Each structure stands twice: as C-alpha cells, then as structure tokens.
Length: 519
Image 1 (cartoon, rainbow, N blue to C red):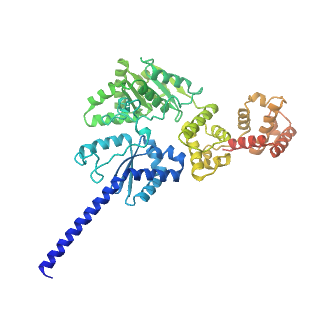
Image 2 (cartoon, one colour):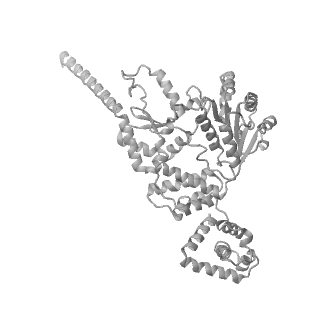
Image 3 (cartoon, helix red, strand yellow):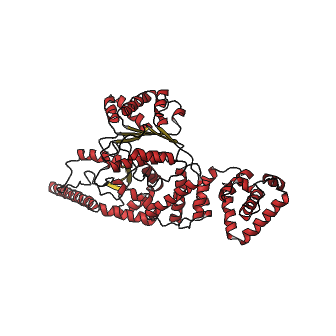
C-alpha cells in the first residue's frame, strides 16, 4: 500500500469518527429536547400500570430533576416517601423509563432538601454550561424540569417555605428537617385520648405571645405527636411567614452538635439554634445518656426560655420518667404544659379511617371500602395509628392493583400477617367484652337476668361464640354468664345457628365478631 493510500484511509477514518461524534451529540440533544415529554410518558405508563389511587398516593409526589445520559434523577419531598417508593415501586419506574428510553440504566431518588443543595452546587460548578436561553445542556449538567407535585412547590400565597421552616427548606440552612405539608390541624382527628394535646398545640400555633413554655407532648409510638408538631409549624407558616421555626429530631440535634464540635464551629451552632422564634425537637428521649449533647441542649433551652421564645418537645413518656436525662433538664421540661396522648379508642380509630379514606378519594381514588371493613380494622388494629392507616392503604392498594372488591374476607387475607402478629388465645371474658362493646351494652346488662331482646340476643351470641371459640364446657360457660344452667347455653347455641341460616344481619354480626376474636 502506497503512502498516499495510507494517508487517504486515515483521512477517511477521521471524517467517519467526526461524523459519528456529531451523530451522538445530535442524539443526546434530541433526548434532552424531549425530556419533559418522556417524563410525561413515564407518568402515564405508571398511572395505567399501578392505578389512579396508588399513583396519586405515591408516584404523584415524584418530580423530575435531570437526565444525564444513562442516569435519571427524581425528587420527593420527604424521606418517608423516598424510602417507600424505592422499596415498592422503583422496579415499576425503571421499567417505564426503559420503555421510553432504552439507554437508561440508573434511577436516583433524592429528597427535596438534598435536591436543592445539589442544584446549588451544580449551579456553581456548571455555570458555564448553559446555552443562550439559559437552559442547561443535558450532556454538561442538570436540566431542571418543572415540578409535577404541589408538595414540591411549598410557596403559599406568594411566600416560600424557606422563610418558615428555618433550616428545613433553605439550602443555606441544613440544621432542620423538612416539614410535611400534609400534616395539618384540619386532618387531625380529635378524640378523648388526644383532645388536650390538640387544644394546646392549636393555642401555641395561633397565639401571638408564648402561652406556656415549653409545650411537652408525650405518648406511645404512632399516636400523632409528629402530626401535631408539623401541624403547629404549618399553621405558624400560614399566619406569620417571617417567624423562624426550626423543627428537627433529637437525633439530628445531637448530630449537628457533634458536627459543630468536630469542625470547631460551635459558635455558629449556638447562634443558629438560639436565634429562632420557635424550636421544635421530636423524640427528645433519644439524647438519653448523651452527656455533652444534654449539656448543650440545657443551655439552648435556657437561652430560648429566657428570651421568651417558644419551645415544643415530644417524647414517649412524661418528663419525670425520662431515664438517662439529667434531673435539671427533666425539671425544666415540666415547667410549661405537659399533654399526654393516650391510646386511641374505637370511635377515634374509626374516625381516623374515615378521614384517611376521604383523603384518598379526594386525591382521585375510586376504591369503595364498606363500612363493615372499616369497623373491622378499627376493632382489630388498636395499638398504633400509623399501623391502622397502613392497613387501610394496603387494602385499598390491593383492591386497586388486583381489581378485587373490598370485603371482610379480602381484608383478612391481605392483612393476615398484621393480624397474626396480634393473635392470642380467646377467653370467655374476651368474648363478653367484645360483644358488649359491639352491641353498645354494659357488661352488667349482658350478665344480668334481663330478657329484653336488646339484651338477650347479644347474650345468646356471646354464648354461641364461647362454645365455638373456646374449649369450655356448657356448664362452665353457663357459670360465666351469671350462673345460668347448661341447658340455657344449649338453647342459645341452637337459636343462633338457626338465625344464621335465615337472618343476614345476625350472620354478619356473628362473622364479624368471630373474625375480631380469632385474630
């Protein structure tokens, strides 16, 4: 081969490589130009695949941030949403993106706070990678897309969330945790167990002056303490956007203090926490045994109280019972108002389920949940409001995804693991209490000699269930029902069996009670 032939071949190869490079760049540009369309297409696919209720409850909170070659970055407002979506729906999202853009191999989901920080850093790094219109090149940096979720746009009446959640929504202040706009006083269900905590929280949120300091809310896990904390902050935001509200967990307070000590920046830490108008610390029991953190918390608490700044705290027990917390701190925690949130009663649980179901329907859900299923959930799941709401979400999601109507048997199947966790041996006392509660009778009436049908029929139902669900003999059952003869129990069992065959209401009552007692 001559030198001229070699030179010609090398020139041709360089031209081909240049053409390939131009083609690749054109493909990237084409992809970037249709990024919004691709995101809309992905959302449509997910809505069709998952159903409207599931989409609105979870996927609808996602917002597009950027697409860089094979990597897509999405964003959600809270850590809970991110973790739930990654656990349950990430595979669906990946499949939908790959169908729209086969080159995608990685999907990241950020929290809005992290997204804001990342965009700020990208703005500093990639300030020169913008075209004449101000839009970033996908190949050179992030290209933000307008948010599809109202929660990701927290401005209300022209005021930004950063002005309120000091450190929560402001990229320059990473001290606080994000506020959840879904938690308000309007959707907090009030009952006897939480009415004092609710009233005190509203008073603090609506008062121009500090009414009691500190406000200390305590109760078991999942009873609404965090909901009230977010509701207070959101109400303050609505009333006075200029007030500085810092909300965070006790664990994050400890982390920020350790970080300040490590980087020798404790003065900035002190200035940040002592310059707020309202300090809200969740789960203060987690600083138990942390002596240095307690020391700083003590001085921060005193400084805020001395300057008449509102302090709001939560814990799982009253101030005097906080083990591992210094006595001087426990004493000060009891200065203001301590409000207990008790375990929920049946009426409150049922009200919470109705409110939650209404919220799902408001967001576009169409699954019908019969009243008897709500009553079943309210009777069975008694320990935790989060668990109660989670059970309803599971039932609704299953019905929406599988297309199966909601009924008692379906709810029992879907929640079998949850119900089995609370399974215990049934006693006659349990049956009597449950039947009396179900029919709204006093226990004394159920065991009395009264023969009015409003009392006699529930008594017969209780005897029937005692025969079916326990190993007690007929004489033993009779003695537990006010010393009755075993023939009375036999008559009651036979009567209920006959009524179940011809009376739909009795059959449903007995089936419902049996499910409640078995699990």
